[in-house]
Length: 135
Image (cartoon, rainbow, N blue to C red):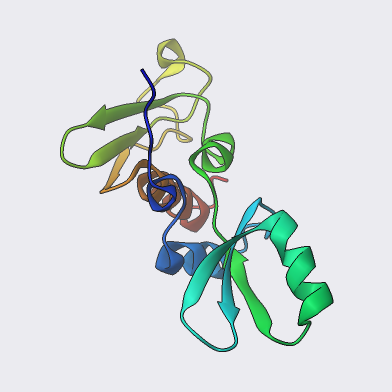
């Protein structure tokens, strides 16, 4: 049995990707939001950007990285709780494991984010932690 997920569900939406760029997240990734010939932004795989640069170097502009679910997972604390119903919900707990959770620890962050896709829920969680200077 194979599962197919639309690319848009595996990558951060344009508005959250721009917010992450503005918050200072590194602009390194395998997918990019790009404006081609000043048109609507579209997703382009990093390796395909080289072809655009050779064939039409001034026909596109990189907007920001479209982080993948796994790239965002690397930015989050090692222990997080996920729930999925209609939306993805993430509970952020800073620490290596659930056993390390200590409500008295000032580094703990009892916060929840939800979004229609896992990528966007993770992006919102990353933005929250960056705003609190925890990542």
